[in-house]
Image (cartoon, rainbow, N blue to C red; front, side, top):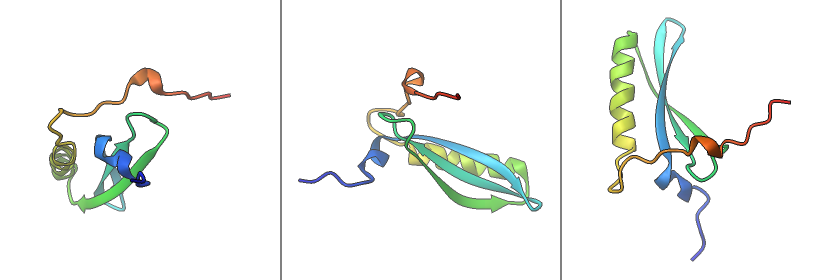
Length: 85
């Protein structure tokens, strides 16, 4: 059985981001590969008239997307290998 290109999404850590764009608040979900934190997928999921509504929706969608019988997946903060030079 071959491993699918996006299988890592099943074990991804899920975060959300709220960004002001043209008078609205855009909500994006950020999926981070727990085994390779350099692999990230950002998906815009909606926009709202207030920051509060966007935060509520973002938090709700994050919890829904992160549902896993093993608990929420987290990226090991020591796994980042970023060289700014």
